[in-house]
Length: 350
Image (cartoon, rainbow, N blue to C red; front, side, top):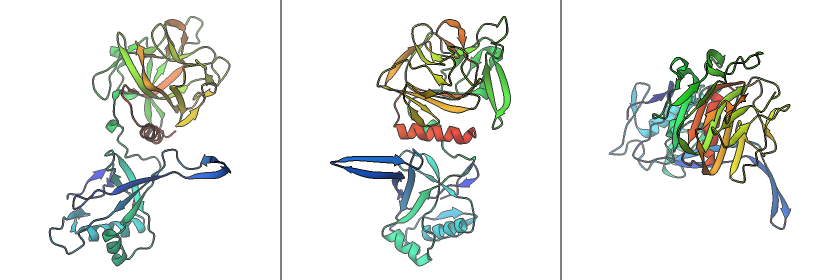
């Protein structure tokens, strides 16, 4: 098996057709209150911590053994894992493991801190060698394009204001650019943003800047936006997300740092940086970037979806920087979407 790298990090070679067994743990404090009642508090990441167990029946020296390429050498699986373990314990970077559940990439390290070669071979033949998920500051190997139901992914550096188009990085569902937004480089973590309504506070402001998907109805399950509102408090009913005429879905609440409670029903969920907030307390990313995530349980048809102005009320335009937008018209497990949020937080250094 040839050696593979992602972003310069070694990808674990899976040998002899045996995928690792994947598990997940959530760190929490839990207290029994009696009569079946309980209270608990999550203290770790809301995406949990994944672990994997490698158990291969063929040990070093067995016939029909697959080989693994590692750092220029061709090794048996046991010798390969031993070399990888020793390198990791000697300060080498963590490696990448590909999940057998969804094909996604994660950083991993060995869970055991004290292994002998004989012990490693024994674990391979019995309960398995345990690997544990870990993180590298400022680096992500997550591949968000493996998620289901992606309608479009819009990256600000790929917007084309001169031709009034924001191409989707996936598929062909491009957004239209209205007005004259500015494409500003090196704003957040060296990345470009699309700045809407920079001149909105002039005595005679120009028409609103916004982006939309005209003449189209999208049944939206989820939208994630890397964005910043360029104010400490909303100065008006700024439209972040709405339909062109009949419905608003995310609107600034004047004099506050929150979005208006629009009473969108039990199927609606709002998150900021992965944290769920009730509809009457939807904190907005004011003068700092964040990941805004809105979710509709069964999908909500939105006609002429638009970002940056409320419906057709042209004076309700948003003073906002847009970094990246994800639109989903298909369902994903919420934990997968929380992993996307974590990827965006890391990628944009939020």
